[in-house]
Image 1: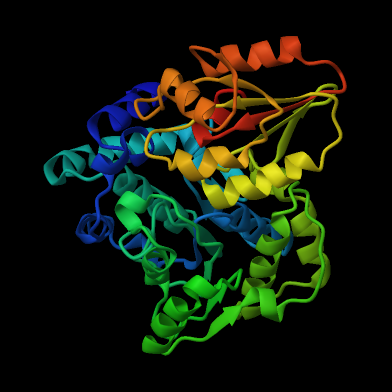
Image 2 (image 1 turned 45 degrees about the horizontal axis):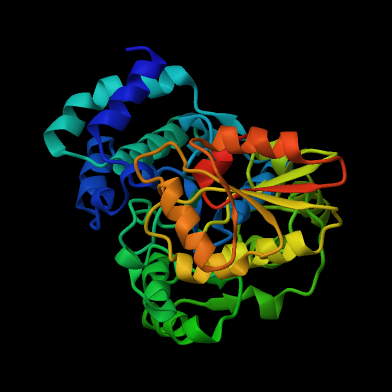
Amino acid sequence: MTYQETLDWMFAQLPMYQQKGKVAFNAKLNGIKNFTAHLHNPETKFKSIHVAGTNGKGSSSHMLASILQEAGYKVGLYTSPHLKDFRERIRINGECVPENFVIEFIAENQSFFENNHLSFFEMTVGMAFDYFAKEKVDIAVVEVGLGGRLDSTNIIMPEVSLITNIGLDHTDMLGDTLPKIAFEKAGIIKEGVTVVVSEYQPETAETFENVARSRSTKLIYAEKEIDEVYETSLLGEYQKKNIKGVLAVVRQLKDFNITQEQIRSGLLNVVQNTGLMGRWQQLQENPKVICDTAHNKEGLSIVINQVSQQKFKKLIFVLGFVKGKDLNTILPLFPKDAKYLFSSPQISRGLEVNELVDRAEEFGLTGKSFSTVKAAYHAALAEAGPQDFIFVGGSTFTVSEVI
């Protein structure tokens, strides 16, 4: 198979949460354990950092990878979902896994996938771990896909664990309260392995402290421990909290020599070193266009607050969501005096644009509907003047269609 044929087979044969939602969520670790055993346990052949959380885990993972690269280490990075190309999920020192590796890995293990009915995510995690082991990385930064306790990545024994902000997202699978969600995220805490929590939240503190205590684990709240101030190339005020978590993790790494200058350089060169996209990313100037993948109440509230601090003549939002989001808590965050161009991401989970328009009107948000995100985006560019501001977001998939 060609690379594209390989991807088509992967997406068609195996359920993928980002496309299909809850039906693809496989809440057990048996599948990934059987698969990595089949691969001769590659996850035991490299050091790692494990990163979970509702918001900020992607940015934090890329920051950590960038700092470690600046310190001269060979660094694996596993994240999800991808924006443009599947290979974005698996990188070493910023370089995506080669197409040939993906093709050969699927071909070599295709019968195992079919016989054992592995999920898309189990297959992808196994691929990443196998690639990192074969390439002999010094360390890999591994981002949780969904939750933590039952996530396929949760078979590693990391050097340090990091949990970022906790918010109400994926409540149909992880629980409908912050403590319940925190319990799922806390599932990555391992016996005797230090865990850093980026942000102290009163609603989740007891959960983290109980789990850490039960596993004889040191718990560090980065917000309370880190005083240093560093700049980062990642735009967005919300990155300040992520930086504190990252710095606390770096402090806890043993057998790694990382200087203050390498930390500084790593934070200033995140995009250059890792290829991260979609975090308060500026697509153009005059009119200024910003896109961001924030897609839940906590993430969007921070992003919209930052939008309100910008200077502009007219504010235009290009929005598209996926099904299952709590629009009752999300839509009230948006300003009523902005112009809205509504659309639907081109995936099966995309929320129908007419439904979005109806729900938005309930909260005083009015605008036009478009059949595709690209059509809405082009309409925004055509309408905006040089002093206007366009924000594109609501979903990772909305952002991916304009980048």
